[in-house]
Image (cartoon, rainbow, N blue to C red; front, side, top):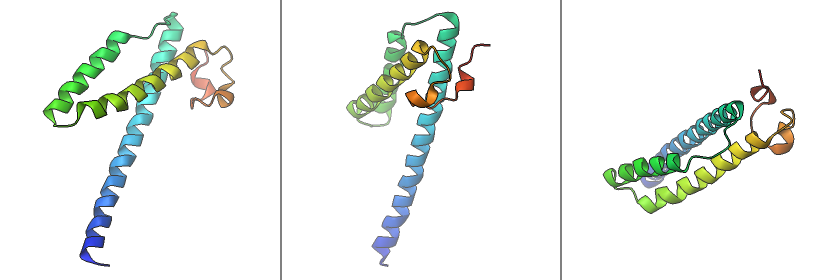
Length: 116
């Protein structure tokens, strides 16, 4: 292998580590969204907070400007994340039978949704 190939492979391994960290963070975020949805369900709250979405985007926009990261890219990424988060919460809020997890493929164990 040439030096170029070795250096390229090393950088690609680093990118793989970053990708894994991103995926791990997305999974943690989804778990937190699940907890929020269960809390909303417990207290009978059904609305999704547009002000929270705006607060997050303001913070991320400031971050993107400070770090010279394209704001439009971050916005596109987070639009997808927000859409998925809202859908995930809606599924949990609308669910009647907590044992039907597998059919809904939302990725949370039925035991987490049982009312205590």
